Every structure is written in structure tokens, then in C-alpha cells.
Image (cartoon, rainbow, N blue to C red; front, side):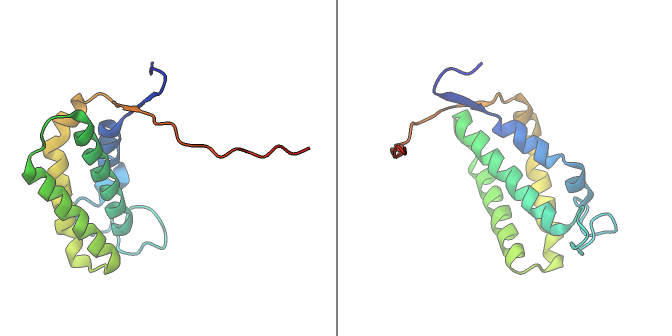
Length: 138
């Protein structure tokens, strides 16, 4: 149960969920018959895989930020490297860059999996925002 003014956000669980999606795992070995470069038919494909890895890494970053404590600068550098490579691929999808990006993202999550599994949801305090008055109509 959450206390008033707070919300529990499962950043770590969400990062794990995204990294373990079956369609993403089909692309972990690179471009293949199970992860074709043609995205027009949906399903597992490089663009979807990289967007999913980006989402997973964003949630990993949030889990680390809200867990407190220090984060290994090497881990931060690898996450930044992968996310910059993803953005570069999305701007210019050179298929030969896909495999190394996925390999590094997979290694990050393989290393962080035990930690992610142990994390409780982060408790965030909600900050009230100013609300505009709604005019009364007759």
C-alpha cells in the first residue's frame, strides 16, 4: 500500500521485463531470419529491438538513481555508449552496427540481472502542480 502523496514505481522490474521480452530475445543474436531487417510486417526487427533496449536502459537508469548509493562510472559509460549508438542507428540504420549495440546492451543486463531482481519498487513523492481554475458555465 502506498502512503498518500507517494507512488511506488517498479523501475527495476520494468527494466527486467523489457530486457526479457521474447521478441527482443529473437534479435539478441543479431539480424537473422528470426530478426529480419524488413520492419513492414511487424514482429521482431532491429528498430523495435533498439527502441526496446533504449526503454530497458532508461528504466535501469531510473532504478539506479532511485536506489541510492553510488553507480559504477563504467556502467554509466556503457549505458551512455549504448544509448548514443541506438540514437545513431535510428538516424542512420546501418545494419552492421546493430549486432555490437545489442551485444553490449545484453552484457549490461546480464551483469545487472541479480541486482535488478532484488530491487523493490521506488517510492516517489508526488508533487502537486498548480491547476488552472476551470470557469463555471451556466
